[in-house]
Amino acid sequence: MFKTVNRVLLGLLGLGLCALGGGVLLGGLDLQRRWGFDVPGWWPFRGSADVVLGNEGRLRWRAEGWWWPTVIAVLTALLVLLLWWLWALLRKDRLHQVLVDSQDGTAARLDGRALEDVIEQEAQALDGVARARVHLGGRRTAPVARLRLWLDPHAEPERILDRLDRDTLIHARDSAGLDRLPSEVSLREVRHRAHRVD
Image 1 (cartoon, rainbow, N blue to C red):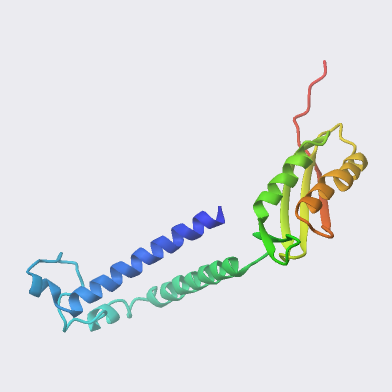
Image 2 (tube, rainbow, N blue to C red):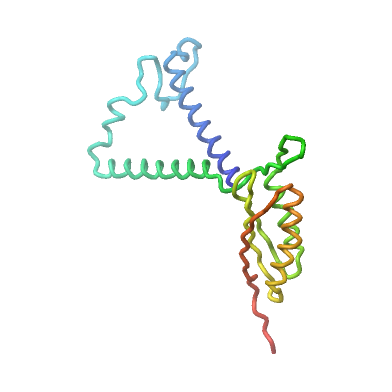
């Protein structure tokens, strides 16, 4: 989800910057006169003598009482949005790759999402588990698995944790060639509608 939002935002920002840069370039090189075409009446850059923001544009709203609070609020919101975006890009809490020792001196890379999917499927196959979500964190050489399990009403949490520890996580650890795979498990009960008894 975040990758899609990130790509869309980057695409829109890139298109906007390209349009702005192309407009400035069009006016700065006086291409409309040289190549003999017209631009719309609202187009701000008509020749090499034009400026990006003239006196009229800069001074038009200064006397209005709402102008400066609006400008400050919009710029603050934009700054907060861009800082959140930067923080989300730099955040590395999800492990995208796990380094697997291939026993020949080199390390193979295992897709972190693939390992998460395998653990999820094995955990969901356990009796009493309605749904499972797995999130790999930590370092590429020392991953940490965080599991969230939603349990059916008839589930036995102690038995599920035992099977998870003895089977599911050992399979994941062995298949990735890891010495250890520390795990945190969160258990939740599946919400279900009450049944009416007559």
